[in-house]
Amino acid sequence: MLGPPPGIKQRLERLVNWYQTFDRNGQLQPPADEQPLRAELYSVNQLEHHAKMLAGWHELATGVAPGRLLPRLEENERILVRTYDLLTVAVEKDRGIVPAAEWLLDNFYVIEEQIRTARRHFPPSYGKGLPRLAKGPLAGYPRVYSIAMELISHVDGGVDAASLSAFVASYQAIKPLTLGELWAVPIMLRLGLIENLRRVAVRLSASLRDRG
Image (cartoon, rainbow, N blue to C red; front, side, top):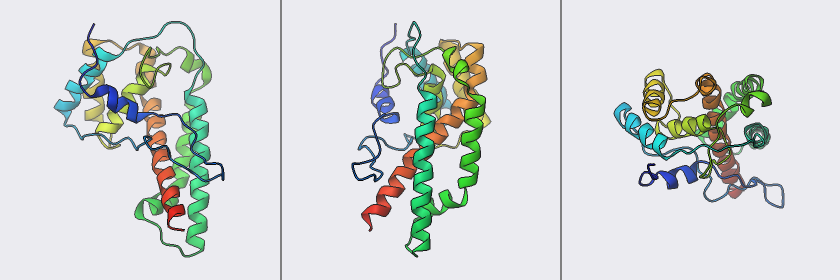
């Protein structure tokens, strides 16, 4: 069995950190290591190599575990809505906001639609049938979700057909995915991108608070 590729465990640990994001005063407070999904940008060839290493490291769990993606989606939605409200108040008070905050305000209706779509296309029963990881920061989460998160991090959120096809095909060259996992790839990408928006939103809110 292959061991963890050099550096991959550290990158995965930076991807997902499930701590509370509100302090005792109700302010959004990002954990120090909950960074946006942004790792070294890879070419298609590099993505193919990385996917094979990831497949070699992944080990699957046995038994049944409670689903964790839907609760995370609910939490992400609450944080995004709260950030939107804080930014709206800031604009009403003529406080300056950064371009990323302007983008979130302008596109919030799109984000809300993506959250509704994710909830509609990922019922709890579907998640129970997906193979889960046995170890690492995403232990207990669907393997295909980890694949989506890794791809998002190495293309800076700019997932396209070429990068997606290359990544999934190379992973399957080492460890085939189930039909259910292949069907789940689009929804996992959506959940991963929403997760990334949550991480950006937390930092926007913290920056706004720090500037008074």
